[in-house]
Image 1: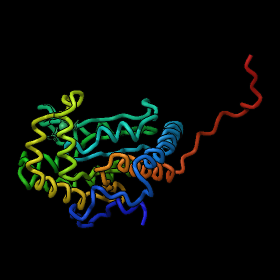
Image 2 (image 1 turned 180 degrees about the horizontal axis):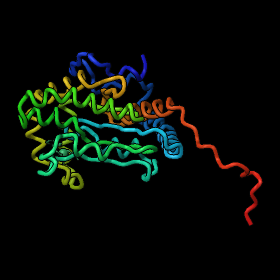
Image 3 (image 1 turned 45 degrees about the horizontal axis):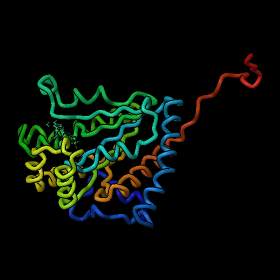
Length: 269
Ligand code: ATP
Ligand code: MG
């Protein structure tokens, strides 16, 4: 077994109850060792991002989806710690504005996709249009159901045009969500993050589970695979995502561009 076991193949039927949010089987050791082992991966990612920028050939898109308090913000903070902010763009997709709603659901997404040499992170994404939209009946079923095909086609186009796409579903347990929401109530500095809307969403846990399962089953293509990341333990989540990113970027076999000729002879006076 390897870290690849978290990657979903198209058509895999996903039953999230079979995926352990507390799994840590790909790391031999505990929290302290895990945090320590992630540091060199952060440094590697920083170097790979610089190479990505220098070569300016590939585009990298990272999609994060999770339940409320699932750890999207923490993942961005920790995994990209040290990466040059100039080369990374984060796009957070909130409730659509009336202008956005007046367009097709991919309209607001496309401008945030990465350019050559860039890395873009989607904090929530076009997948909300088959998640919250489905769970809350914001459009009829026949409308959201055809979106899996649209999304696959959209991502195929991005991939054909040079985008490496990696999607992460941060898998937390209901108990862990309770603890994290409780912490937002208990700790004064976290209270700003608390939203009573999260409690209403929590009541819909089962409906969200179904929506996530179908999303994972239907949109994990070879050109834009989903990973189910055990996310109850933040350190393990960060470790696994860092490894997948580093492995993927190393697989691109990037090279620094050829420098100008004759640099050895230059004397700067
Ligand atoms: P945090 O984890 O810090 O609370 P967040 O991503 O939950 O961050 P919020 O502003 O709390 O940010 O929530 C954004 C809300 O926007 C979510 O409830 C999400 O479901 C909703 N949303 C995002 N995209 C859509 C969409 N296309 N249609 C309807 N609602 C959407
Ligand atoms: Mg929220």
